[in-house]
Image (spheres, rainbow, N blue to C red):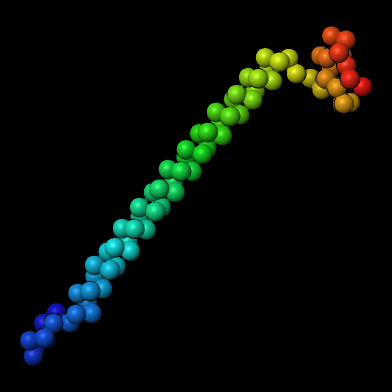
Length: 80
């Protein structure tokens, strides 16, 4: 801003780009963290699906409340 004596207010001129830089960097950081969170959540869902598929394929379905699986007991492989 030019004052009556013809001098420039350098504080305002330097603060404006500094504030803009802080705002842009904050936005980029928030967006990066959001993408990372979404990626991690997707990986967790895929991992859970693989675990469920493995347990289903292995036949470990029902637990009899003891230290062995009811299906293993039926097969004669009970461990307890």
